[in-house]
Length: 478
Image 1: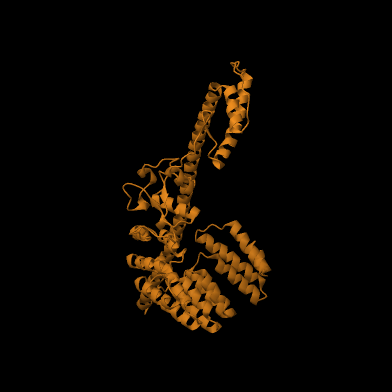
Image 2 (image 1 turned 90 degrees about the vertical axis):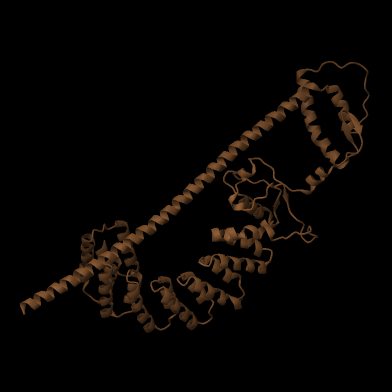
């Protein structure tokens, strides 16, 4: 009998140690996942800060170059103006101005005396002001043109001048070393509403993949001028012109790269009302990227109401573990019963998805069904404390205590479970000493687990308890 009892104790101890080891492994795995999630978040923030810093540095460099360029032009114009003022005779200059304004002036045939320095400066200022007015008059009446003080005939307008009159100029502040051709086209689209597919640049050779070609590789430098050809809308297009040709050439590369760029290109197609072209385009994206859930969601958005369910069904066949697709499939249903049925099918593929479980629970109107479902949820997802607390709130006093004890076994490092137990005792009993004992035990257990209690977080818990009406629990926490 003694040997049997010893063997049973050894087996019990081994099972207990195995359970503790499994629990410890689960806790370590949870901590690792949390640290990994925190690391990924901080890494993304660091990348965003670096990208913002590079953008600011590029803008500062561009502004410096622009300032130096404008300063150089201004100094050159000032030097040319001074040379002209000093080289021209003020007497002939006044005569030219008089003729330009239609004033007859009597001229005496005698040499003019050399002007004084201050007179030269004054005449130069007057000349600069009249030049502006004369240029305005010439634009209105081309017959009154003057060249070296003499009238000339009507000025001929060349095709270059006509092109300048019909063209429009926009200014873009971009860094050619970091900006691609596609980014340039998208910037032009934002300012002028001209789709990317209608923008034709005269490059030789024409780049096949605009997203991978930098402007600096096309010999484009700061302060460069590019000529953009835009075909006429509503008129006769050139022979053999296809408005979607350039768009279709590189859209496959865009979709296979990132879904955000694909969505931006699709926006170009849907804005003018070309919904059919956008549907054909997103269909190519679904064929090329069947494992990308964002592409399937965009295809569902563009599809008609009758075809949306079929699109989501094909997406779920390719990605059965996508939570977003299952939630979208539930949104397409009209009644709660069918929505719940779709979500439960999703839980068969993803049993540990909290979002799917919460969506199913929200559809349940019966409290008993919600309790039964939460019992199953905490078995599938025991590491989520909010599910344990929700289940305890739906139970009576005795059963809620059992639920919280089970939760403490699964999550010994979670202080919210202990605080909820203290609130439960305060709400269902007159023994306030039990509330203080629970909080003291919580502190000892957390210290035994090696956790440091954050005073600020602890005070927030006390404030929340006081707002909820649990004054004794608030005092015990403080």
